Length: 332
View 1: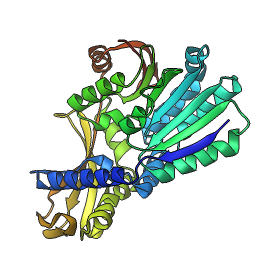
View 2 (view 1 turned 90 degrees about the vertical axis):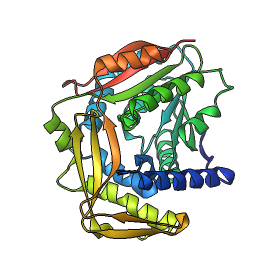
View 3 (view 1 turned 30 degrees about the vertical axis):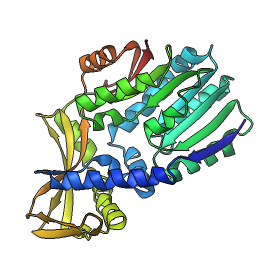
């Protein structure tokens, strides 16, 4: 079995990504109120801090999904047992949740390929090295990709020799507003084949105090994660943000049905960004949104699947019904 990874973010791809990054920052800081997309935070260090978040006891999306994988690993295995399949994970990170399933697939003697995709080359390299150290003599091949989601998936568009199952876990879809989420799952469907599966993690609507506690931890890891964005802007774009002049806070917004994280400027200040050749003014206690995590109802999930050309196979809930991994089949 082979274990390797490729970095698709080289040459012109890097230039394209740099342009997209700069454009997103310019557009976001020019809005009123200011708003930057959370994907900007995920460099290698940002991915490491997010891994810390997933290990916090109060961060229920990660804890619930681990419970689901332990409780339903045989259900997922039975779904795939008769196929030569490829498991594609979008935004794999350290892959520790998925490792529960990978280990069970190998113990069940399933022969399959695991294809983790992540924007962080460091995360992909570390994941592939870890899996090779554990399973070099197993029934799994690993082909990691450092790439954006669709860039990685397009490398498979002409391959129909295996049934694909795509994992999009951890409530990452909640980072998208509803129209963008619908666009995402439609584009995902177009790159897959009839009969392929997707499994998407959705954080469900629940008590607002539970949501508040999940995104405002006592160790202030969420604050480090959000303020890391300012360090990235300083390095990538030649900005002069001072992190000590900003604080972070998250809250549930009933108007948007999302937990929103904001960075607040603790003083009136002007920030220069050399790469954009612009200055941006912040008033004291002005808020800049950095995260958006939509909370779904089961009806919204089912409507999204059916309107986008999928058949719902099964909902896998945790014991408190805080979270669901929903399995859909591609219909064409």
